[in-house]
Amino acid sequence: MPVALVTGSSRGIGAAIAERFAADGYDVAVNYHTSEAAAEETADRVRDHGQAAVVVGADVSDADDASRLVETTVDELGGLDHVVNNAGIDQHVYTEDLSPEDFDRVMDVNVNSAFCVTKAALPHLRESDADPTPSVTNVSSILAYTGAPIEVHYAGSKGALLSLTKSHARDFAPAVRVNAVAPGHVETDMTSDRTEAEKQEELAGIPMDYFGAPADIADAVAYLRDARFVTGETLNVNGGELMR
Image 1 (cartoon, rainbow, N blue to C red):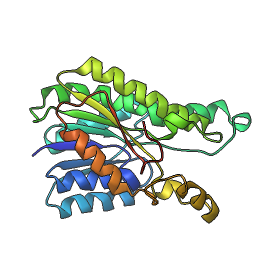
Image 2: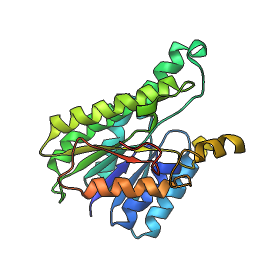
Image 3: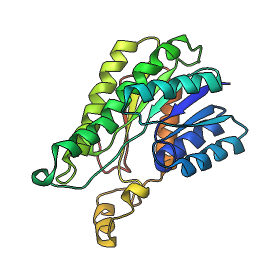
């Protein structure tokens, strides 16, 4: 049975990706940092699809924890064929109020984690006989292109993730494909604090006239997982808000 590891998959986009992989016949390693109960719920939904699941708590920005996560996945599920680097945190603060510690923490979780998990997973991905070839998918953001006045560290981290994606794609080809998705406005816990006025303002800029759902991003990740001739690319999933 093919195996996928999805970081930050206790809820939101990560949980939707984990469930989509399970629906497509994958055993799934569900990763969390603080939300163990939610991660167990994600694992239960994976099992509802008849697939095996393992729940692993780990701070994926820490190299040792990332390595332990990968090794546990391989030991418990028998291998590793696809990795989705979804773990991320956000914070709304202007630059003049942003501490170096907060800047570093967002970079650690959003960028360093992708590096640490991918590096730990690479030997196993190279050994995979997945068809099409094994892959890594990084979850970025529309803010990688547009920037954000009160999320400079978040936007910067997501931009760095796109560069990391291209570099890893060149480094690992042809054995392992590496791509990214860049979601636009998606309804998750991370975006639930917006006022109704803010939502209407954002909606006015989306030609499709609705906010995305986590399942929309999971669809894009599934496409990249199966797209055998696509590597080093970013799939923008934003309802037409930003057309490139």
